[in-house]
Length: 153
Image 1 (cartoon, rainbow, N blue to C red):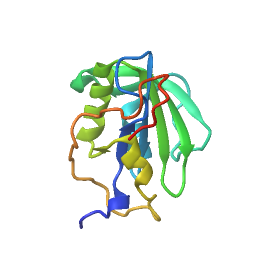
Image 2 (tube, rainbow, N blue to C red; image 1 turned 60 degrees about the vertical axis):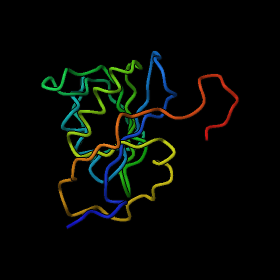
Image 3 (cartoon, one colour; image 1 turned 90 degrees about the horizontal axis):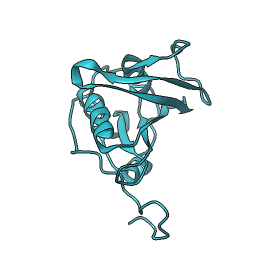
Image 4 (cartoon, rainbow, N blue to C red; image 1 turned 180 degrees about the vertical axis):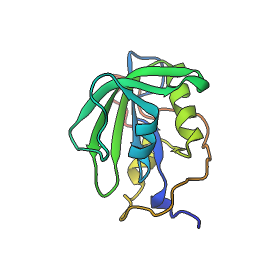
């Protein structure tokens, strides 16, 4: 069965291109919580079976086999109908690339934040369990440079 467009899980960088202290990544889609739960090691309390809006956790995200993990803050923005998560990590391009590779290896599709905002939320939970791995290339944060008054294209 080929997944519908809104049944896929997406990753987008929300912060402008370039090195910065912090980067924010959005993970949205029916498999977002499942994938993040597999990749995230919380510092203290374990992640619940289902996402809880407004909750956040400090921990490490990544895979040692793919180059390591980064200290991140995981935040649940929305749980239903489709999970919307944010990962706040170190802002260097290598960290962003590492996390992108880890997510893409799990079938998450990379896109720009503008593309992510245009996607309709899934109306139902999908019954299929795997997503065909396909990368749209390296995540390239879009938008004006920090402090710029020029609107994004």
